Amino acid sequence: MSSPGPDIPPMKEYKSAQYEFNDEQNRQFSALADAMQVVAGLMQLLGLAFVVLCALAVTSAIQAGGGYGPPIGLGCAALLCLCIGFWTGGSASSFRKIAETKNEDIWHLMNALGQLQNMYGLLRTIILGSLVLSIVALTLIAITLAGK
Image (tube, rainbow, N blue to C red):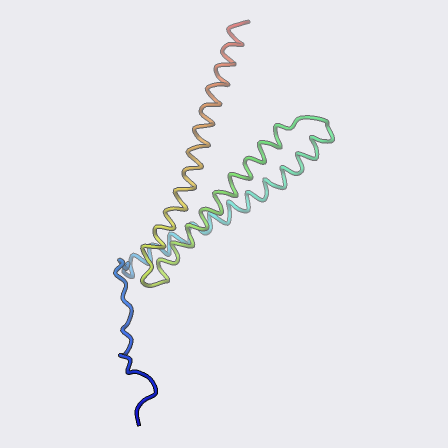
């Protein structure tokens, strides 16, 4: 009596051609992920606190009929903290997966680096914008003082 299906050779164990980090390197990635996760959580908590303060400041500005500068500043601070918190958390998650998974280390490393690149791109834009605004403000103050 013959077998019902064709003879199939046994499956070979899958081996990735990607680089796999060793145990010591995985411990480093894990420690980094732990620290980043704490920072991410604190930044998200700070961002939520700024959201609440922004809402209170908007309510106060509406009742006063003006003075929307502080709520705008608090809203920007909330957005910044939340962006940094979520990007750092995403990066921390990818660093953690480097230590926990096999055959996907490079993919997770590149994902973590992409998250960090997004965060630092945002910070670069904010810093450059702040410098430009500072130069404009200093120029306006100098012109005002020179005119007196």
